[in-house]
Image (cartoon, rainbow, N blue to C red):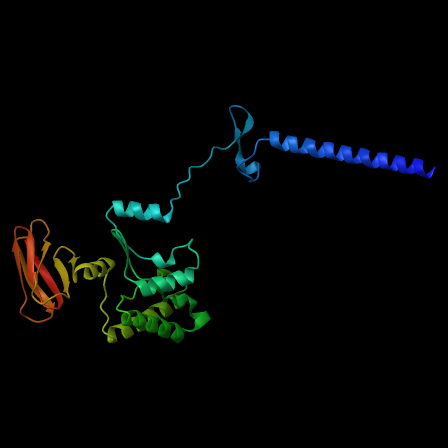
Length: 274
Protein backbone atom coordinates (compact mmCIF):
# COMPACT_ATOMS: atom_id res chain seq x y z
CA UNK A 1 0.00 0.00 0.00
CA UNK A 2 2.84 2.33 0.90
CA UNK A 3 4.65 1.69 -2.40
CA UNK A 4 1.42 2.37 -4.31
CA UNK A 5 0.99 5.73 -2.54
CA UNK A 6 4.59 6.66 -3.34
CA UNK A 7 4.08 5.83 -7.03
CA UNK A 8 0.89 7.94 -7.13
CA UNK A 9 2.61 10.88 -5.43
CA UNK A 10 5.55 10.66 -7.84
CA UNK A 11 3.20 10.57 -10.82
CA UNK A 12 1.36 13.63 -9.48
CA UNK A 13 4.62 15.56 -9.01
CA UNK A 14 5.81 14.67 -12.52
CA UNK A 15 2.45 15.68 -13.95
CA UNK A 16 2.54 19.05 -12.19
CA UNK A 17 6.16 19.64 -13.29
CA UNK A 18 5.30 18.85 -16.93
CA UNK A 19 2.26 21.16 -16.80
CA UNK A 20 4.31 23.99 -15.27
CA UNK A 21 7.06 23.56 -17.87
CA UNK A 22 4.45 23.68 -20.62
CA UNK A 23 2.98 26.90 -19.21
CA UNK A 24 6.43 28.53 -19.00
CA UNK A 25 7.26 27.51 -22.56
CA UNK A 26 3.92 28.90 -23.73
CA UNK A 27 4.60 32.19 -21.92
CA UNK A 28 8.10 32.48 -23.45
CA UNK A 29 6.76 31.81 -26.92
CA UNK A 30 4.04 34.40 -26.40
CA UNK A 31 6.63 36.97 -25.30
CA UNK A 32 8.79 36.21 -28.32
CA UNK A 33 5.87 36.67 -30.68
CA UNK A 34 4.59 39.82 -28.93
CA UNK A 35 6.03 42.98 -30.53
CA UNK A 36 8.33 44.97 -28.27
CA UNK A 37 7.29 48.54 -27.47
CA UNK A 38 9.85 51.29 -27.46
CA UNK A 39 7.71 53.39 -25.15
CA UNK A 40 6.50 52.42 -21.73
CA UNK A 41 4.44 55.49 -20.89
CA UNK A 42 0.77 55.36 -20.05
CA UNK A 43 -1.30 54.13 -22.97
CA UNK A 44 -3.83 56.93 -22.44
CA UNK A 45 -1.09 59.55 -22.84
CA UNK A 46 -0.08 58.07 -26.20
CA UNK A 47 -3.63 58.10 -27.58
CA UNK A 48 -5.83 60.78 -29.10
CA UNK A 49 -9.39 60.69 -30.44
CA UNK A 50 -9.73 60.64 -34.23
CA UNK A 51 -13.04 62.40 -35.00
CA UNK A 52 -13.16 61.17 -38.58
CA UNK A 53 -12.61 57.51 -37.75
CA UNK A 54 -14.36 57.73 -34.38
CA UNK A 55 -11.61 55.67 -32.79
CA UNK A 56 -8.63 56.25 -30.53
CA UNK A 57 -5.31 56.34 -32.41
CA UNK A 58 -1.72 56.72 -31.26
CA UNK A 59 -0.21 60.20 -31.33
CA UNK A 60 2.66 60.79 -33.79
CA UNK A 61 6.15 60.95 -32.35
CA UNK A 62 7.41 64.41 -31.54
CA UNK A 63 10.63 65.42 -33.30
CA UNK A 64 13.67 65.46 -31.08
CA UNK A 65 15.01 68.97 -31.37
CA UNK A 66 17.46 68.69 -28.50
CA UNK A 67 21.10 69.00 -29.49
CA UNK A 68 24.18 67.93 -27.60
CA UNK A 69 26.41 70.67 -26.27
CA UNK A 70 28.98 69.90 -28.96
CA UNK A 71 26.46 70.55 -31.74
CA UNK A 72 25.33 73.79 -30.10
CA UNK A 73 28.91 75.07 -29.96
CA UNK A 74 29.48 73.99 -33.55
CA UNK A 75 26.39 75.92 -34.66
CA UNK A 76 27.59 78.97 -32.74
CA UNK A 77 31.01 78.70 -34.35
CA UNK A 78 29.37 78.61 -37.79
CA UNK A 79 27.61 81.86 -36.89
CA UNK A 80 30.93 83.44 -35.89
CA UNK A 81 30.67 82.99 -32.10
CA UNK A 82 33.84 81.33 -30.84
CA UNK A 83 34.20 82.63 -27.27
CA UNK A 84 32.19 80.79 -24.63
CA UNK A 85 31.38 81.11 -20.94
CA UNK A 86 30.21 78.33 -18.64
CA UNK A 87 32.53 75.59 -19.91
CA UNK A 88 33.30 74.57 -16.33
CA UNK A 89 29.60 74.39 -15.43
CA UNK A 90 28.45 72.13 -18.26
CA UNK A 91 26.38 69.14 -17.14
CA UNK A 92 26.93 65.52 -18.08
CA UNK A 93 30.61 65.23 -17.19
CA UNK A 94 32.06 62.83 -14.65
CA UNK A 95 33.57 64.27 -11.47
CA UNK A 96 32.25 67.83 -12.09
CA UNK A 97 34.05 69.45 -9.14
CA UNK A 98 37.40 67.95 -10.09
CA UNK A 99 36.87 68.97 -13.72
CA UNK A 100 36.02 72.53 -12.67
CA UNK A 101 39.16 72.74 -10.53
CA UNK A 102 41.34 71.42 -13.35
CA UNK A 103 39.86 73.89 -15.83
CA UNK A 104 40.53 76.72 -13.39
CA UNK A 105 44.22 75.81 -13.07
CA UNK A 106 44.67 74.91 -16.76
CA UNK A 107 43.31 78.18 -18.16
CA UNK A 108 43.52 79.42 -20.90
CA UNK A 109 41.45 76.67 -22.49
CA UNK A 110 40.90 76.48 -26.25
CA UNK A 111 39.79 73.93 -28.82
CA UNK A 112 40.42 74.85 -32.44
CA UNK A 113 38.82 78.27 -32.96
CA UNK A 114 36.88 78.01 -29.71
CA UNK A 115 38.07 79.90 -26.67
CA UNK A 116 36.63 79.18 -23.21
CA UNK A 117 36.52 81.68 -20.37
CA UNK A 118 37.60 80.54 -16.88
CA UNK A 119 35.00 78.89 -14.60
CA UNK A 120 32.56 81.46 -13.29
CA UNK A 121 32.38 82.79 -9.73
CA UNK A 122 28.80 82.72 -8.49
CA UNK A 123 27.47 85.77 -6.65
CA UNK A 124 23.85 85.22 -5.58
CA UNK A 125 22.67 87.63 -2.84
CA UNK A 126 19.33 85.77 -2.73
CA UNK A 127 21.17 83.02 -0.80
CA UNK A 128 22.30 85.44 1.89
CA UNK A 129 20.01 83.85 4.50
CA UNK A 130 21.97 80.64 4.16
CA UNK A 131 25.55 81.94 4.34
CA UNK A 132 25.32 85.53 5.59
CA UNK A 133 25.69 88.87 3.79
CA UNK A 134 29.28 89.69 4.78
CA UNK A 135 30.38 86.09 4.28
CA UNK A 136 29.12 86.08 0.67
CA UNK A 137 30.84 89.37 -0.20
CA UNK A 138 34.08 88.30 1.50
CA UNK A 139 34.08 84.90 -0.20
CA UNK A 140 33.39 86.34 -3.66
CA UNK A 141 36.01 89.07 -3.27
CA UNK A 142 38.59 86.55 -2.07
CA UNK A 143 37.86 84.23 -5.02
CA UNK A 144 38.17 87.15 -7.46
CA UNK A 145 41.58 88.08 -6.05
CA UNK A 146 42.71 84.45 -6.27
CA UNK A 147 41.87 84.50 -9.99
CA UNK A 148 43.97 87.61 -10.46
CA UNK A 149 46.88 85.98 -8.66
CA UNK A 150 46.74 83.21 -11.27
CA UNK A 151 46.86 85.92 -13.99
CA UNK A 152 43.28 85.10 -14.98
CA UNK A 153 40.22 87.27 -15.49
CA UNK A 154 37.61 86.85 -12.77
CA UNK A 155 34.24 86.02 -14.36
CA UNK A 156 31.58 86.86 -11.75
CA UNK A 157 28.12 85.54 -12.61
CA UNK A 158 24.84 86.62 -11.08
CA UNK A 159 21.11 86.56 -11.88
CA UNK A 160 18.96 89.65 -12.25
CA UNK A 161 16.48 88.08 -9.83
CA UNK A 162 18.87 89.20 -7.09
CA UNK A 163 18.36 92.87 -8.01
CA UNK A 164 14.86 93.08 -9.55
CA UNK A 165 12.76 90.88 -7.29
CA UNK A 166 9.03 91.20 -6.56
CA UNK A 167 10.02 91.69 -2.92
CA UNK A 168 11.42 95.19 -2.79
CA UNK A 169 13.46 94.56 0.34
CA UNK A 170 15.27 91.63 -1.29
CA UNK A 171 16.03 93.69 -4.42
CA UNK A 172 17.42 96.58 -2.38
CA UNK A 173 19.59 94.24 -0.34
CA UNK A 174 20.95 92.56 -3.50
CA UNK A 175 21.83 95.89 -5.12
CA UNK A 176 23.53 97.03 -1.92
CA UNK A 177 25.64 93.88 -1.75
CA UNK A 178 26.60 94.21 -5.42
CA UNK A 179 27.57 97.84 -4.79
CA UNK A 180 29.82 96.79 -1.91
CA UNK A 181 31.48 94.04 -3.98
CA UNK A 182 32.13 96.36 -6.94
CA UNK A 183 33.51 99.04 -4.58
CA UNK A 184 36.06 96.55 -3.24
CA UNK A 185 37.06 95.48 -6.75
CA UNK A 186 37.45 99.07 -7.94
CA UNK A 187 39.63 99.86 -4.92
CA UNK A 188 41.79 96.90 -5.97
CA UNK A 189 42.22 98.47 -9.43
CA UNK A 190 39.87 96.17 -11.34
CA UNK A 191 39.46 96.66 -15.10
CA UNK A 192 36.07 95.59 -16.41
CA UNK A 193 36.13 93.76 -19.75
CA UNK A 194 33.72 91.99 -22.06
CA UNK A 195 34.52 88.45 -23.23
CA UNK A 196 35.67 89.59 -26.66
CA UNK A 197 38.26 91.91 -25.09
CA UNK A 198 39.64 89.09 -22.95
CA UNK A 199 40.02 86.95 -26.06
CA UNK A 200 41.78 89.69 -28.02
CA UNK A 201 44.15 90.57 -25.19
CA UNK A 202 45.06 86.91 -24.81
CA UNK A 203 45.62 86.41 -28.54
CA UNK A 204 47.48 89.63 -29.45
CA UNK A 205 48.00 91.82 -26.32
CA UNK A 206 45.58 94.50 -27.50
CA UNK A 207 41.84 94.84 -27.99
CA UNK A 208 39.28 97.04 -29.73
CA UNK A 209 35.69 97.52 -28.58
CA UNK A 210 33.17 99.76 -30.29
CA UNK A 211 31.66 102.53 -28.17
CA UNK A 212 28.41 103.14 -29.99
CA UNK A 213 28.89 104.96 -33.27
CA UNK A 214 31.21 107.63 -31.93
CA UNK A 215 34.41 105.68 -31.51
CA UNK A 216 36.26 102.70 -30.10
CA UNK A 217 38.02 101.81 -26.87
CA UNK A 218 41.53 100.44 -27.47
CA UNK A 219 43.40 98.62 -24.71
CA UNK A 220 47.09 98.09 -25.43
CA UNK A 221 49.49 95.85 -23.47
CA UNK A 222 52.12 95.10 -26.10
CA UNK A 223 55.53 96.51 -26.97
CA UNK A 224 55.34 100.32 -26.65
CA UNK A 225 54.65 102.09 -29.97
CA UNK A 226 54.62 98.93 -32.05
CA UNK A 227 52.10 99.67 -34.83
CA UNK A 228 48.70 97.98 -34.69
CA UNK A 229 46.02 98.11 -37.38
CA UNK A 230 42.27 97.68 -37.32
CA UNK A 231 39.32 98.65 -39.49
CA UNK A 232 37.31 101.82 -38.99
CA UNK A 233 33.53 101.92 -39.62
CA UNK A 234 32.35 102.64 -43.14
CA UNK A 235 32.11 106.35 -43.86
CA UNK A 236 34.76 107.35 -41.31
CA UNK A 237 36.87 110.32 -42.50
CA UNK A 238 39.15 110.85 -39.52
CA UNK A 239 40.33 109.23 -36.28
CA UNK A 240 41.59 111.15 -33.26
CA UNK A 241 42.61 110.26 -29.71
CA UNK A 242 39.90 111.67 -27.47
CA UNK A 243 41.00 110.33 -24.06
CA UNK A 244 43.82 108.16 -22.81
CA UNK A 245 45.12 106.44 -19.70
CA UNK A 246 48.75 106.22 -20.67
CA UNK A 247 51.73 108.32 -21.85
CA UNK A 248 50.99 111.23 -24.19
CA UNK A 249 53.29 110.19 -27.05
CA UNK A 250 50.63 108.09 -28.82
CA UNK A 251 49.14 108.73 -32.24
CA UNK A 252 46.61 107.28 -34.66
CA UNK A 253 46.22 107.70 -38.42
CA UNK A 254 43.43 106.73 -40.79
CA UNK A 255 44.30 105.57 -44.29
CA UNK A 256 41.98 103.75 -46.68
CA UNK A 257 39.54 102.76 -43.94
CA UNK A 258 42.30 101.27 -41.78
CA UNK A 259 43.50 102.76 -38.51
CA UNK A 260 47.21 102.59 -37.71
CA UNK A 261 47.95 103.28 -34.05
CA UNK A 262 51.23 103.57 -32.17
CA UNK A 263 50.42 103.35 -28.50
CA UNK A 264 51.98 102.79 -25.12
CA UNK A 265 50.60 100.47 -22.48
CA UNK A 266 47.24 101.88 -21.48
CA UNK A 267 43.67 102.57 -22.59
CA UNK A 268 42.68 104.92 -25.39
CA UNK A 269 39.38 106.26 -26.68
CA UNK A 270 39.54 106.77 -30.46
CA UNK A 271 36.86 109.09 -31.82
CA UNK A 272 35.57 108.82 -35.38
CA UNK A 273 35.01 111.83 -37.59
CA UNK A 274 32.42 111.74 -40.35
